[in-house]
Length: 256
Image (cartoon, rainbow, N blue to C red; front, top):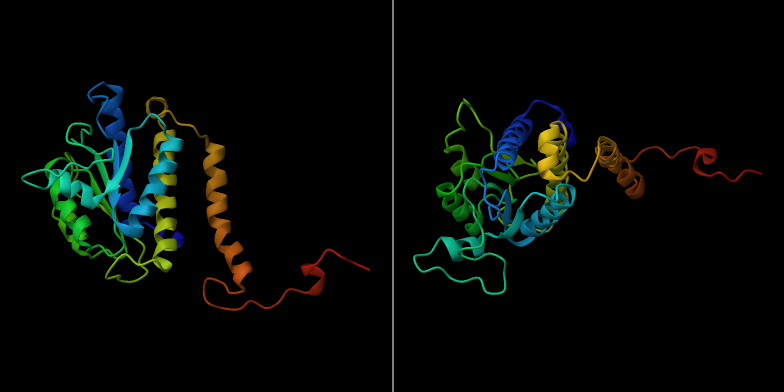
């Protein structure tokens, strides 16, 4: 995933589209075109994918505390906004009048890309916003097909909306290697979004950035060195190879 992110592939194109949408949203905040109740970023999904999305939203809120970032289950969105008779979500933040989702950046996390609730909500939310993105296992999934039919933004010829881990098709939301893969991809997305905002002083102020260039550099260093650390712990590198043991002198500092 890290190697793919370094190349000019579909994930980087999706990151560029997400960064562009984020800047447009912050510019609206800056000019006072958005209400206080307007949700800037909504992260949704179900099951394990939702739990990962909630952690992503929490980290993003910590780094940009002035943004209105919400997270909720796709089933709750369908229950409240997708029914002729809305089902009140008692005990939860989401309600009929509390969230303004007009133009909100929606990030759907669904590693299967075909679970009923995320798929249905991807269609439902198109009536409220054109800024919808997907984090999934493969580029060609059911939710991805729906998003590829959406028109690009004003003045844009092509807009990529799909982030994928490329670890294989998943028929459901399993708690396997897909969790680690999704978490890795969300980390890269978080870094990109933070870099996008940090590069613009006016947007930095409106987002309330609580981090610096040094913080992002440290995060990237930890992200890259994490693979080497895991390989050292399990004794196998990322290619499945068992490295040759280091000389005794290199494995201990005890001499004599």
